[in-house]
Figure 1 (tube, rainbow, N blue to C red):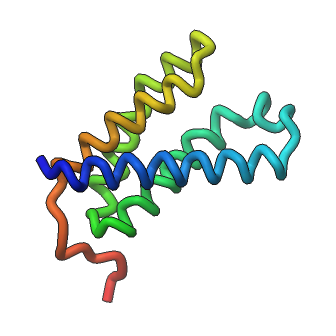
Figure 2: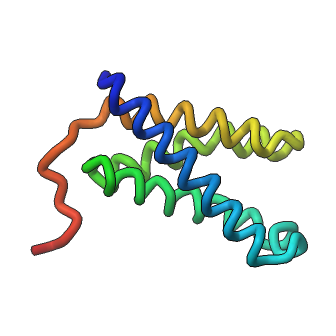
Length: 111
């Protein structure tokens, strides 16, 4: 496990999730999230994970798999009304996942 990568992945994911959440909250009414949060939340989470993977030079498929797995406990937290606690837990789990991924030789394009 790479401790430096753990901290950078966690920080990047936290910053990107927070930034995107703030932007969406300012741009859209609360009712949008009541109706579409179940779709927008996971999509935003995966988008932020893709950004983290790109910045850190991690393989996209492995990083997105880790993001999906880390997000599972967050669903339980949302169901009991602890949305942001679930997000924090997911960020920690995602950071640990990323810290175990190999870096380098990442092909982001087909050419």
